[in-house]
Length: 202
Image 1 (tube, helix red, strand yellow):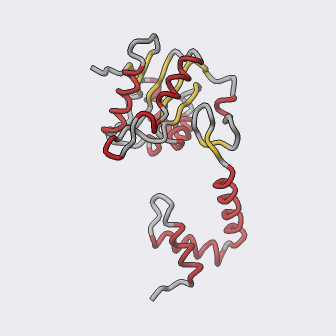
Image 2 (cartoon, rainbow, N blue to C red; image 1 turned 180 degrees about the vertical axis):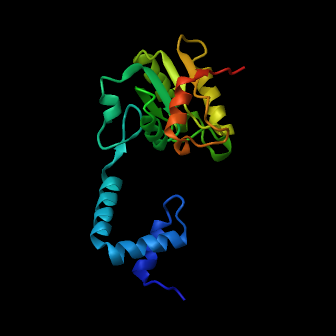
Image 3 (cartoon, rainbow, N blue to C red; image 1 turned 90 degrees about the horizontal axis):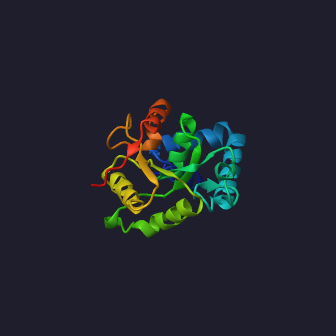
């Protein structure tokens, strides 16, 4: 028999949409918000509704933003000659927390995966390439994951600029093979950025 009322059961199911949250954790969170911290639950519901309804993607870097051009792209103090290419907005957060990078970003929202129907157009690589040309970017830092798909994406991006003067480098040192960037600690990310190297597509 279902231990929760229909409304509570719906809340528990909804909370399981969060990464790493199973039924037991979802149940504990739901009971805490509804029984012990209703004001916190209301604040969470309001913030979640506002974020889902009103956030968009930056028209330049494709990171999550409240406005058309995000704060990172609008910041004139950042190095406009460097572009760090990442898979997800979470990767931007991880790199920013490391404090080891002060250039611009481009978010792919994924990686090349033909079996899943994800090709270059789905990742916006032509938009990224056009941005490199129009903004006079001299270095593209590829910070995709070290999975097979991430590596394939990195090589594809490197090949795009093979005939140009743009330097394409790849973060390498300290990032574990098969690891996801958002789970790597800040000092490791900072070291990886400092130790980046050109991509060898051959």
